[in-house]
Image 1 (cartoon, rainbow, N blue to C red):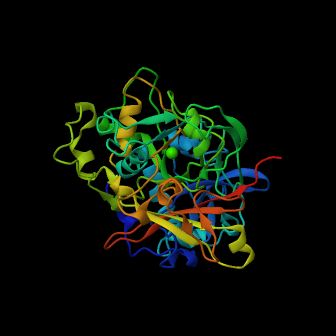
Image 2 (tube, rainbow, N blue to C red):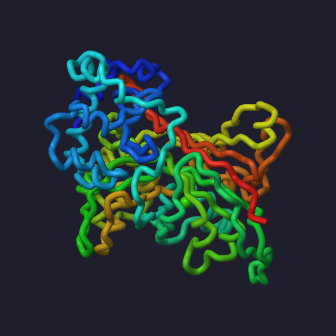
Image 3 (cartoon, rainbow, N blue to C red):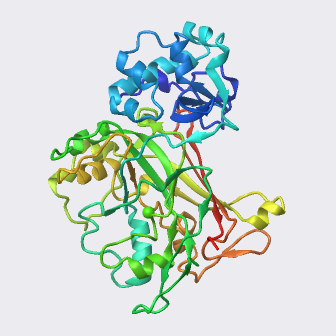
Length: 438
Ligand code: CA
């Protein structure tokens, strides 16, 4: 979609809290999510510190004239049906919601008189936004791949395929949880010696990974391919992701087939899906490939992907230990990274994923892989930040971390800023580490 009146930085909402300059959810954002009302899941839109109940808005006649498909999809318990309708439908709904929540429109004036349209966002019980049928995790940050690779292969950190295709693996959809869900430290096999023998017990090297996830909108049929030029038409929006990882399990199990139990015990995502339409003002050129990098195969090249395939999203990881919580010490920032530095774009991931005819379905989650940068403060996981335990991270109060401790709360945040544009945010993706089962 083009930049239109819904992105106008001058727009104000009749929901006052949405007009605060530091709000993640101004009227220019309009992210979709699922919350509980009367014990049942409802589709909603975050606006300031409130949620617009889409069913209530529809039933109050505030969205008259939308298509029957849209009206029906708004009544579903998850966003799959809405996202399956595709980007043009989402874009048209965005226009209606913008008018509904603006302070200067007849629709807004009418909506203000409907008391049931809004619920408080703080305190609301949020759900996973979609039924996630499949979850794929990529490895798209060359900074992350170089850092991790150099720990194991100092002379040759990147494997020969890295610059030719977006590396990924199939994750586990059943253990994707919404922000705020506690995550229990897993048990598993670990081995101090590379050749074994292993022992079994709680992971001693639990980690987070700072990532961005794409939620698939319209899918593709099995056997068909999604061309790169059309890939973004299949992405409904983006969420924040924390790919919890057990490094000691991973080290022992990952060869030759890649991550398995080290990754599939939990993956946290933020509850609000920020649409690609909302992100339109924050598009930036794809990271330039170095002159010595190999030429890409044609199916991974398109001029619009080069010119505007990346998104200017700033990402942060914060941590608050149980000790800090007890002492009333606020969370401390561990790192800050830029999503635009990724070596591969989301569109390339979608095109490559379907290049063999694999079908993507509405609601699927495609995560980017750990977002890291070239400096220490941009390393997106503790494995890198504490450099495999050799450079522990100091916390307020004298604690140190090489990996996560029980009681640690990890908070991922993300937002977009650009000159002449209204800042929009993703909210947060939180999770606290629980002690392993006895
Ligand atoms: Ca990951």
